[in-house]
Image (tube, rainbow, N blue to C red; front, side, top):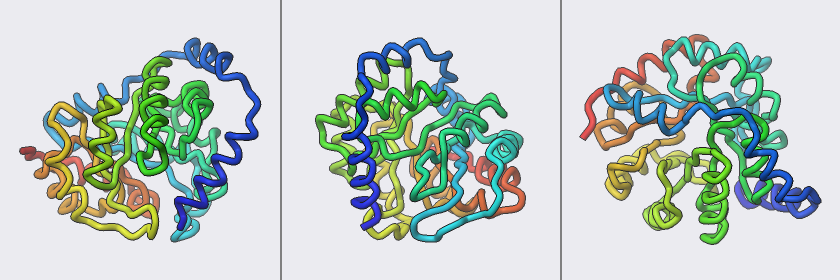
Length: 262
């Protein structure tokens, strides 16, 4: 089970972290201004499907996706392709990412940036803000309800937007109880890492229309994008199909063509 092993490692790291939360909260509150991740998606999704373009070096199931990625160059290519926002993996051990990747990508563009990682403590939430992220990921399957609510409240307090990732109807309900303003549906099973291309379509109706809806993982081409748009999604989060393509800007542009929204 990939998720269990990854979470165990992150929780062990969090438990050994002796930094004071109060100090980190103060530091986070005085970090530079954020770029409005949710606001950007709302605006860009009015006429077309918005795209959150991800910088991802490797995955536990597939290994290295592309050698020699330069985060700043890839981020600029994504921006040229009219991506609305960026997602940057900062997990090193399982995904080959880093805080440096996030900071380089953000510095190279004007796009809002999601820190894509396994948030398991209040310290992680503060770190996301301090390192320069505009949005933090909370995975419902990885957190208790108390953690989900508490981390979401803290993130909002220090100025971060939050993407709450879900995998089934029960987790969508948990996200709504945590006052989520943006909910993602991950089509990848976090136990097997297999992709179910119909999962997001099935679950779209469970998310109220006033919530920003994001379909994650397994988005391959225009047909996938159009299907998700028709189901009611505002945005798709796309990683592997961009990273492995020699012209990611063209791929993003093709996904954004999806117009209709129920």
